[in-house]
Image 1 (cartoon, rainbow, N blue to C red):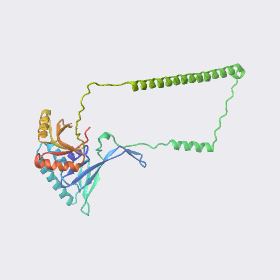
Image 2: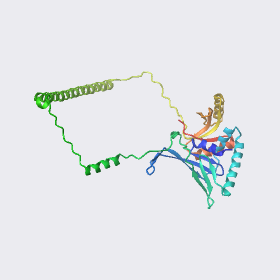
Image 3: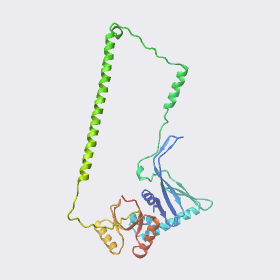
Length: 318
């Protein structure tokens, strides 16, 4: 069983994937960054870490394996337990466990697990397809400094060129006066146009204010009378929220999903449908919760009293 493949699939959608009796892989989102020394740009991503203290089975990994391999939940538990024993045995013998696209795990001299994440995969869905790249450094300032240094050594001076020809303006002073008059007319026309536009805007603003006053006056004078008012109705609606959902089942046919929903509601559960997953299955949940601890507690109760195959889904619904 390729355990790392299942873990990688779940890390794209969840922040915590637990291998029962072994440890948990956690993800944390980080922003895009730049390495000034190498001029390398890194896209936003999820950093993977490992916590060997989280060992309790939350049902996520086992349920996913059971769903993908089309086996029972109990069979998936047995498979995971077998792989876990092999991992612990390999670590005890000093071997390095390489999980493709996740990282490397080794056992330190103190008997603790050390994890080194892999940089080959970016588990942040929003940054899918983005990769790191190196950009050459910008040298504009260097060129500017070089020019300034040259100017200090060799000052540059510009001498206006004198041209005298038979038909030049210097020999025709009336052309110079005509050019000055044309510029004066242009500036005057622009000023007059700007003044005219300002007068129009001022007039429109005054008209708008008067119209607003008239509307306010009409509203204040109006009286609304309802001869037969309808009785008021108060509805108490409880909206479920939270990102932790206890899944009762997922069905290819929506009618079966509706039957399951009716069955759970008749038993007193606050059940609802949460849409279709990426496999095209209609999902029904017992309820949704704001905290993992509250959802985990209810999950244990449901497995004990009603459905051993129920599992916990961590997902932010739209």
